[in-house]
Image (cartoon, rainbow, N blue to C red):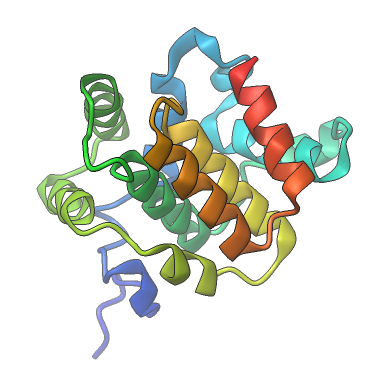
Length: 187
């Protein structure tokens, strides 16, 4: 009998759903960036969704659409998390600020030992860009995943910039949308 706590998608590394609340960690990671991000108090997924929406469409969403930004499937949130981890280790170093944010997010999300172990394995062997891109099939999800990865890091190394460029290309995020994400995050 299949384990109902595991996702059937092999692309999510078989992480137990109860042990790894990807939505909770993504929310907490964005909040851990602190007051530098306006809207983080609304929730990380809402911030990511709004950022992706504005980046693709060039305008603000109405209240109905904004509420829906937090309603992403757990598999997409897990893919966001995997992209965030891959971005974090793109330069080969998890710096002190990145590690602090990650530890705070894991604590805030209440992740159990198995979930923490999955995350440590992911840090040691992050998803490849093509693996992330192959799991995405629409422009809005692609832009959300790109925005999540960009939110995870401070673009302070050439490797991180190159990672985001390659991720945007692999996800087919329009160059103007990727530029809007980066501009908004640097503001």
